[in-house]
Amino acid sequence: MAVLVTGGAGYIGSHTVLELLNRKEKVVVIDNLVKGHREAIKGGTFYQGDLRDEDFLCNVFEENEIQEVIHFAAYSLVGESVEDPIKYYNNNVVGTIQLLSTMKRYGVKNIVFSSTAAVYGEPINIPILEEDATIPTNPYGESKLAIEKALKWANKSGDINYIALRYFNAAGANKDGCIGEDHSPETHLIPIILEAALGKRERVFIYGDDYDTPDGTCIRDYIHVVDLAEAHILALDKLRREGESGIYNLGNGRGFSVKEVIDKAKKVTGINIPVKIGERRLGDPAVLVASSKKAKKELNWNPKYNDLEKIIEDAWNWHKNNLNGYRR
Ligand code: UFG
Image (cartoon, rainbow, N blue to C red):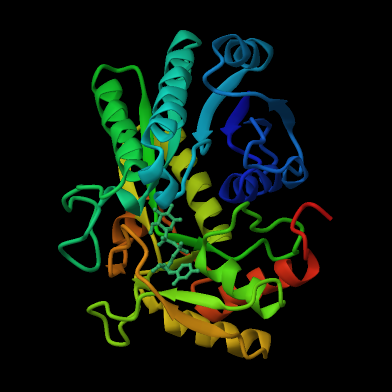
C-alpha cells in the first residue's frame, strides 16, 4: 500500500516525500516537472506526467496500490494568477477534479490537500482563525478555495475524507541540506534576500513601506518547511485513525515585517544586503499571521523550528551550497 504524492518534486512536496521515506512509508510521486525538480525526489516510485491526463493518472492507480493521496501539484504565484487566471483554474481546479474522480474510481478515500492562507484575502482578525471569512483577493486563492468547497461536498456524499492545510509562508530547507527551495522565477522574500547576499541580485526591493504596520512593511508568518512536512504526516495519521475531515492553518503565530526579515538575514549571513524601497506589489495584504491552535490540538502538531533566525540559517545553508539550485 502506497501514499501517492502529487507535486512531490516541488519545494514543500519534496520535503514531505523525504519525511514519508524516513518513516518507511511506500511512496509514489507524480510530478509534471514544469516547476519541480527530479533531483529533489529522494526515493519512491516516480511518474512524470500531468494530473489532467486521465489515462496517465489511471495507469498510476492501476500499477500501484494507492491507499492515500497528499496533493501538492498546483501553480502558486499570486501575481501570475491575476495575470492568467485561466491557467490557474485549469491546472489547480481541473487537475484536482481529475485526481478526485480517479480516486473515486479506484476507491481511494483519504486526501491531504495543500491549501493556502491566500483563501482568507484581506483578514479581518489577526491571528487568523480557520472559521474566519474566506474572501480571496486573487485567482490563486480562489482556485484553492474552490477545491476546499469541492472536498467539503465530496465528504458529505461519502466519497472523500480530507484534511486541507492552509499554509502561511513556507521557508527554510532540510537540515542536512540535501533539498531546498529552488523556484524559477524566484518571487519569495527569503530566497530573494539570500540571493542578494550571494551577489546573485543587486539588491532586495521592499514592496512598499507605507503599510499600516509598525515599520510600514508587510508582516508575514514564516514557517519552516520541515514543520510543514511533518504536519502532512500528522494529517495522514489522523485520516487513517479517524477518517475525520477538517481544515487547519499552519503558521507560527508570530509575524515579522519585511524589514525585520532582512535584518535577521543580515545577522545570519554576516553580509550587508543592499535594499531599496519599491512600489507596493499588487494584492499583498498588510498582515497575515495564523492561529495554529487547532492544528496543535487536533493534529498534535508541534512545530520544532519556529525561530526565524534558525529558519533563515537552514535556507542560507542550502543557498550558499547550491548556487544554481538543482541545476548544479
Ligand atoms: N517581498 C518584498 N520583496 C520581494 C519579495 C517579497 O518586499 O522581493 C514582500 C512581499 O511584498 C510580502 C512579503 O515580502 O509582503 C512576503 O512575500 P512572499 O512573496 O515571500 O510571500 P507571500 O506572502 O506573497 O505569499 C506566500 C506564498 C503564497 C501564499 C502566501 C500565504 O507565495 O502562495 O504566502 O501567506 F498564498
